[in-house]
Image (cartoon, rainbow, N blue to C red; front, side, top):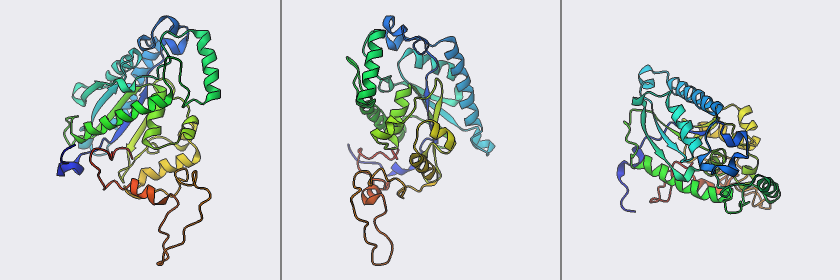
Length: 318
């Protein structure tokens, strides 16, 4: 654990964390592929390759346009994390064509962001039956025979996020603090949903509502003016609703775009009301201000990012 250096708060957080789903793969085209090829070796289709090129160009344009100040615009950098699966690595290879060498600080293959394991060679008829069972059982907790559940994936994504923060915290990404840092995570559909669920503390119920992103679709989390990350800075309300966020979750994203760290969102009823609908309204305090906001003091404490608990507290996970 050790001593936390005093410069801790001076780290520049990434301006954006962009989650990209891989391009169209042979398996997306024809599920018979899984019975002869292991999931991790399934290649992109020609269509998938061109999707990835287009995604690379559009992410590049986004970063170029991100700053009105010409000098600052020239100073952005990007760091990639990629799933070890063939389709993710090929996607990154094509995305990378859009970036000049000097813009790329580095790339890391990251096993913990691999796709959910559906079991080894997949027999098509059996998978069809299994997926029907999963619908009855519930997507998050259903574990594929010889494979994983989304809940298992959640656990490894949590561990990945701790490392992600540590990379930034220890300045392992070696970037000039004057440069705007962007992280691009090239991964899989379920992975990006679980990542967002963990990051924004969505519930299992909320996760079940989310739609899978399309091939090479990406989700941009951007740092708002108050130090919270939000999807609502780059994505419209219509988009967020299409992805399966409830109006309440959308409101939370909009709030985050402007929220000051340590404030607490009163609209997030799923934190407290969902559990304690029988609680009476708290009395207002003597001076007339209501001390316990709707989401409760627990939320306030948890979100007070100024309190830094050694190694356990993750300021990124807002």
